[in-house]
Image (cartoon, rainbow, N blue to C red; front, top):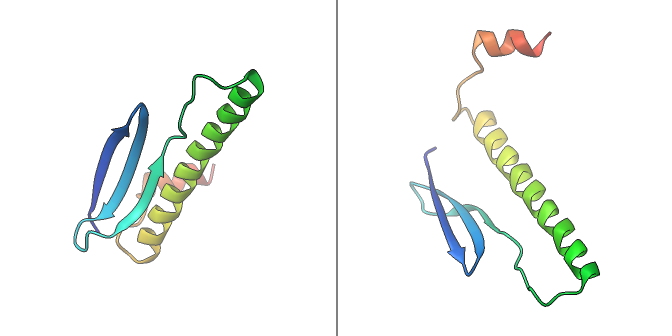
Length: 88
């Protein structure tokens, strides 16, 4: 299944959308957490933690999307070299 990847900025915050190219349905939508320069030091630390969590969530969802494609047979089997390197 081919995908269309849309990227943009909302202010200074990057966004990402991965859409099914044939149906146009959004498969994944992600926006980097907003920044506020007037936050207290504790709030900046909390914001940094939320940013890190958002990035982890993005990669988790990308992994699940790829796994779904693999299980549906939309992505080919790993090559012999890839299989061999996993067993080492």
